[in-house]
Image (cartoon, rainbow, N blue to C red; front, top):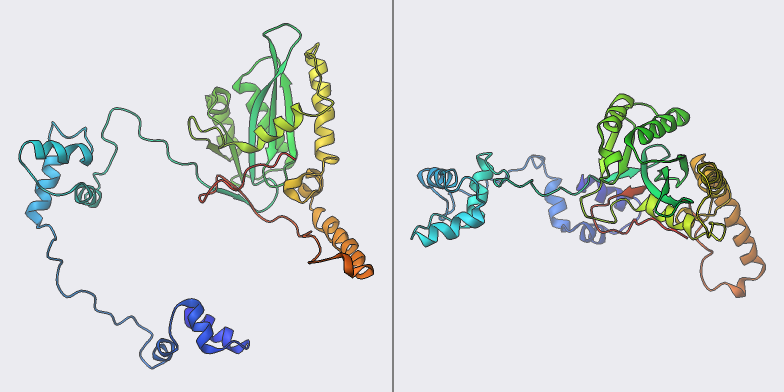
Length: 339
């Protein structure tokens, strides 16, 4: 593959030495690869075992001590010091781990639950591939009581695909909301990931059974990690800091539903979202954003041609936003933008 890439670059006009340097090989190595019989890897590897390799008897002793009654609930980091206190040295902690892994014995050994793994990274390349949902409180007329806003957002387009406001928090309301949104959007089986936090309505039996029936893959935040479900949280902040957000509690459930309905209509069809290049979520969800952004580019290019002295660099980037990653493996750069 490297050879083909280099030859392709050379054919396009690049110098051979420079193309080889980019991929980290020398031109002489490339010439050797082109010789007859060089297609196979002829390296023979080490001819003798490392001098510090454990013998089979030593490996069996490591496994036996790790599985001994007094050690079977302990990790190698606990086992090695305890053996040292008894005047016994078998191997280092890293060697214990390596041997246990090879024997398929490297498992959580304590009574406590194993550490929660990082949520799997989900990449949305288009609408209705990754949704995220959450519940927020809306103050009710009686002090200390609330209405509950259930909201499902498409991570790729930022569109609110469905919502409901109810008098109580329950998994049944959430399950009906998700099922209705999936029907309205025509979501096919095994094509959608639904992400949520670890609340009771999100992980209840009714919700999980509904997701299984619809062929929707559930995804959950890590416990006690506040930013693993950022998109609905950012949306709720946008909603509650709107100038139109009532300063007083909602007088009734119907009033709360009416206000949220108007907000959703504004958010989806009028709000120019900064995270998707200032188009509306509805336009991006429907695939109209590329044409809108292309028209903006032409406006800027025409302005630059008319007065080039006012432009020190290229025109503003109006390219459509690409893929959106939920829980990216490298860093947390894909936070929801609330502007």
